[in-house]
Image (cartoon, rainbow, N blue to C red):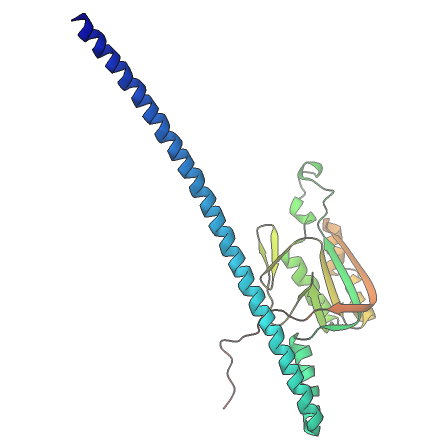
Length: 242
């Protein structure tokens, strides 16, 4: 009986040890599977972003190649046809107005920046920290004043503004033409420098931004370059009158 009892105890202890070992092994496998799953998900997301980036770059490259071929065809047609020269000039002017051509000329550069020297703890209770930050409405207001002053072409941080451009805010990030941009915002405007510089007038939006706490600077320049619009122009509702 004693031998049988001892054997039973030994077998029982072995079962407990074996059960503990199995539980530990299962937990280890579970954690390893979780880590592998997370890593796989992250890698899949990275691969998807990379594929979209490659597709965009490929499409943009094809667009540039097509534009080069079209430009070559126009040039050849112009050499053979006097009327083609006139049409080429008209098309060039249309592209300028649509924002499809890189432009250079005189104008002003307006730089709007967040006031990073101010913190929530460093202002009084009746002040708002958002007044020290550049918002999408600030950019829209300054751009409108520049257009009203005679600006012929405008870009913000290299993004050309066209008739379909949108300046929106997503959290703390401002988006223009679908591209996320951060402070400082450099607004390049081509036009009569004297007329454009009038946005520095008393009571203008630039002065208001300074009074509320943001940083704004306007300088004249004789050599401003505004890039062409890199997106695609499209329309859904416009139709030719028949």
